[in-house]
Length: 161
Image (cartoon, rainbow, N blue to C red; front, side, top):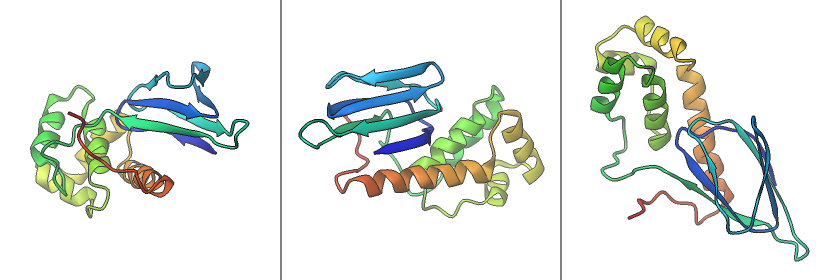
């Protein structure tokens, strides 16, 4: 299995269980040692490769550091408004995290702008300054969710306590 260009809006831990695993990041290649977690920072671009061992198996876990307590089926408008008002470059990440948590929501830039009390142009400019694109973030979040759900029927989003 080889996955290229992964970038999650949450920090994660990759755990190799069987086979030979390699994570390629800007800092270089890191070989995952069996049962020894490898941390990946929020929004860090990486490739992952898992090669079967002598038994023909390669398995592992991808654990996202995501808080789903109180999760809803749609955007958390309050959280997004706070991130937008902060103005410290955190809005694009907050929006992307919201999109990841609710990928099936009918996200539109017009609705987000209206709910946050800004114009579409102001929202686009804020995202641009933070190196985000509304459409690209939504497409990426939906693709990542699809990839996770396709990869294993046991894939589920549950809060860790």
